[in-house]
Length: 207
Image (cartoon, rainbow, N blue to C red; front, side, top):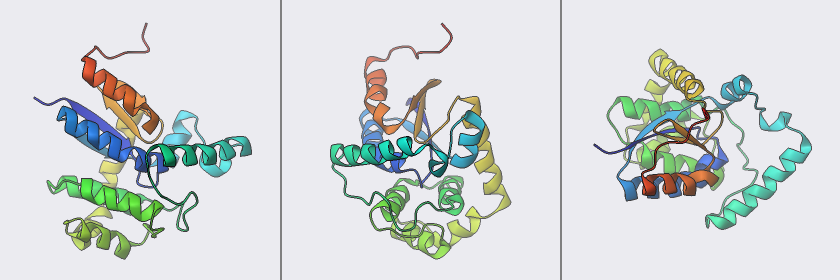
């Protein structure tokens, strides 16, 4: 059986966008099964001691801007540091991922378009019509998935992802969980790759 990775993220996370392709490269290299788990970042931050961006100290906000530029260069990307329609309510956009999974569909092409839509094209991913169009272009039934995204069942699944995140010691986006070991941030993808390559037992905080 293929190894599994739980992938916690939100479409509004720049770091999830920056790390998505390198993560997918690992998925292909090691034939991983990905359990996609979109989460509400604001709720996750508040319950684990983090702060939304605008509530962080200006020093941290300035450093984040420098880091975005470094990683933009490192990953060979071209994106806006402060896109016009960010931040936004990612509930519907994230929910489309859950709705696609529910329907047995692969959300990866949609995720790629959605990330690029926010950070490269400056689209408004709080707009249902925009989300539906991106899903359509990804080969998914956009209107159907957007309608399903707003349902109580998808809301409940979104909440369950948050609960799962807390249980797994997840506190940000993106986070990759391999055999119970948490890798927080796209800058830990290389360490995730090392763990997969070596086949070592997972590290734990219980020492």
